[in-house]
Amino acid sequence: MPARNRKLKIADIKVSCGTCSLSELCLPHGMSHDDMDELDKIVKRQQPFQPGQHIFRAGDTGHALFAVRSGALKSYCTTEDGDEQVIGFTLPGEVVGLDGMSDGNYASSSVVLETASICELPYNSLEDMCHTLSGLNRQMMRIVSKEVVADQAMLLLLGKRTAEERLANFLLGLSSRYHSRGLSANQFNLPMSRQDIGNYLGLAIETVSRLFANFQKNELLTVNRRQIILTDMRRLRAMVEGCAGSKN
Image 1 (spheres, helix red, strand yellow):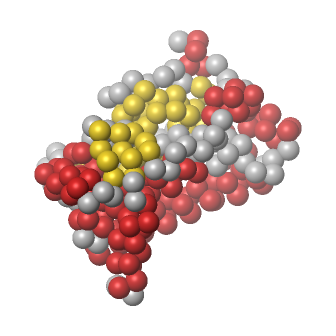
Image 2: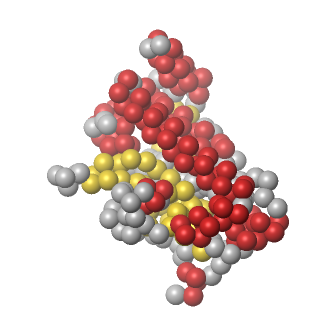
Image 3: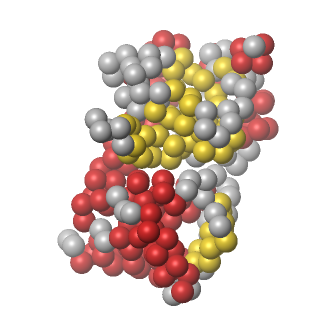
C-alpha cells in the first residue's frame, strides 16, 4: 500500500512526536541538518497498527528496528509449554527489535496494546549510516546500553523485591518514562492489562488486583479502570528506595 512506503520527513517527526520526541534514534543530538536529511531517507512510516496486531513475531527474519511514535507495544516470549512471558512494554519515543540483530531472527514477539504509529528503520541502512554519522552511532550505542541496564534492573527486581515493591517500582518507572516525554508524571493510563503487569512482574493477577486495592486504600494512588493517579509519589519512592538501602 502506498502509505506504507511513504518516507517520513524530519518536519513530520517534529510535529507528530512533539514531547514524545524520537531523539534517541531519529533525531540524534549534535547531528547537522544535512545529516538529519540523510537519516530521513531511510525512515519508513508505517500505517497505524491496531490492538492485537503484531509488529513482528519470534522467529521472523530480523530486518529492522521499530520506533514507536504513538501508542504502546508489549514484547513477549513463548515458553516450551506454550505459555506467554511478558518481557517489556514499549512507549512512544522508544524502540523495539534489537533482538533481531543477533542471529538474523527476532527472539521475541511485539504486539500492539494501543493503536500505534510506527517508524521502521532497516538494519542494513542503519548500519551503513552508523559508519558515516557519528551522532547516530552514539545514539545506537546508548540504546543498546539502556537495554542492558534495563535487563539487569529487571533481574534485580524479580529476585530481591517483595510484591508491593515490584508494583511500586513498576509504577514509578512508568511515571518517569511518561514525564521524560513531557506528559504527566502522576496521572496516566495503563496501556497494559493487570494480567500483563502480573506476568511481567512475576505475580498472579489476583495479587496485582489486591495490591492496587491496598495502594488505593492507603492513599498511594487512585484507580479508575486503567487510569492511574499517583497521589503520594514520596511514599512510593520511599517504599522502593528504603528497601534498596536495607539490602545493601
